[in-house]
Length: 477
Image 1 (cartoon, rainbow, N blue to C red):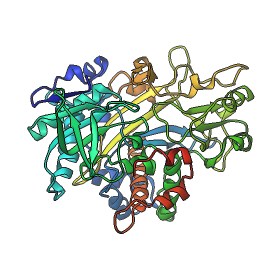
Image 2 (cartoon, rainbow, N blue to C red; image 1 turned 90 degrees about the vertical axis):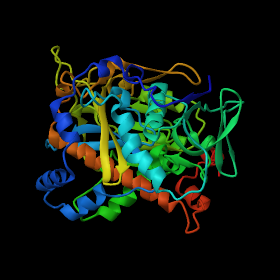
Image 3 (cartoon, one colour; image 1 turned 90 degrees about the horizontal axis):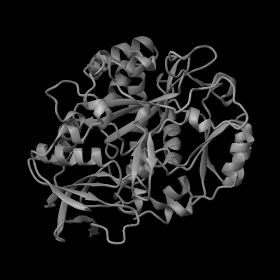
Image 4 (cartoon, helix red, strand yellow; image 1 turned 180 degrees about the vertical axis):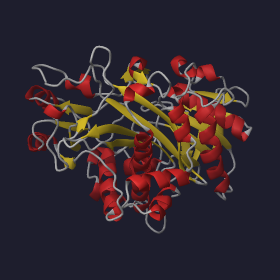
């Protein structure tokens, strides 16, 4: 079924959480962090980072994004040979998952972050737009139906009206979504087309092939948020560098692995060699763990070079591994802190997903979860070892063109059982939050740069920033 109508009163928690999350008790520190006031966060952060001015940090936490209003950053907890611990941004996503993995804050909050996002972000934004466009509401998706339907049902309750819930897959020869003069229409189960005034979208797979940049229908997040960095690691890296230049002298900085962008396939071995023979190569426009290649030996590099790729440009990043086999970069050698050793003495690489959204009061966290790698982090790489098994944390498993599974055995909840295994403290959570906000703002500023004063997309500028013909040919202008 490509389309169905969701009515108020249909939200059922069992449909929208993993069973292990629905039955979990949230860790007290996570609950404490989520309710920590802005003033206390600023006071604590500036106490630990005395060169940061409170007024500067407050202006960033109260920043009002124009395009990138809902984000989820993936962060790694790392250290260096001197023991300096940091939260490093791996990427920031414009359609982040997370609600189904987040324990409820209390028993009375049956809709959790689904409703929270609709109430404090989506509804105020739709109401703030002085638009004359009439029509219904929609949630369009191509992945993660557990969360997408949860958002549709929460939206129906918050707005007290029916919501169109529509599957919109890439390559669909008879899609249930179309645009006329910038206005979205969706097709109902009965075959009737309905005009949409606002759509919450969960399109993750090359969404620019289905959604135009300019629309009269309000789309959250708009497609430019993807192109500017939310689904484009190339521009995200450039956005971070540009924003870091603005932040210079403030004591604030977006922390990332060293990144080389605009790399052709032929150049990859050169940059891998420069980073000491260990590196991460990424297709900039992939997600869900697809298109990420960890390279720690010649065999993995050879396998990468022999593969075929749709896109022609890559980014190469310094690899964060074990102290004995991490990349040598301009920031020194970073390595994973990893999980607290298990009873068998095993430490696993884990990342943290921090989901945030814009509210009338500023950018606030919504949900958090973590993921660990499949195999423990080894002190030394053995011949023939698969580095992805030790470094890859994404849970998504592609099971067909439009079907995805998830390896929930590696999911780490923010509950009393799993959180302690991460070895994180309150200050680490605050650091992760600040890094998420900074990277979100950087991408939003990049998105704003991509429009001229007449609100037209600056195609020439975009091409100069990301000259990948395969990507440019896909974008719906």
